[in-house]
Length: 295
Image (cartoon, rainbow, N blue to C red):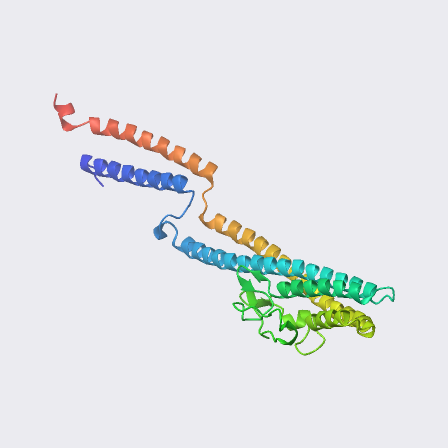
């Protein structure tokens, strides 16, 4: 096949265009840090990248849920610690007041403190996290207890769950009746109310009977406290598992989409050398024309 000057020039321009396009692509990759800046860069890789991005976005949501659940339970853990301290103080006072050396005036003073402890327990029962009540089931916008009626008030029995994976949701809330006792029974609030009344009326038998009731409700609260601790551990494990999963997904995405900077820089330098060589060769070819032979 006869090669003409026009063919040489066209081939030279074609080669220069390809080299320039390749260099622009390399520069874009270095600037963005991504191998894929448009679907045509790697049609198959784009599919993997989109899947990894979707997995990471969904994983972020699950991680946020797990952290939120852990924070809620840590708040509950602190509240149960406070409630336990309240009951310990109530038992100490009841034990003191059951002593025959205490008279009715001293017991009235202790009754006043018991009433304050009961108010503190109501405050604990009405505690919130981010403005949502913790011990009223799914009715998180309503306080479960009032000062006067806490002993007979029912809490919502619904449970509040958080999704920590596509197939797993973990209960976070614990209803007030599980923690403090059922309405209409010897729950925490009624026990404290009865103790305060027995102290006011100087009822020694009632004061003595309150000791066993305090132990019963305190044991029930300890079971709830243990349940909260178990759930905290589960959420902490879920946080660790999700974070490990995110590291693996990020690494897989990086293999598909992220630029290997040293290799990309070396490749771009090599293309610059090729471009310079092509331009030099092209200059020599295009310097020669028919006029050079007619002189």
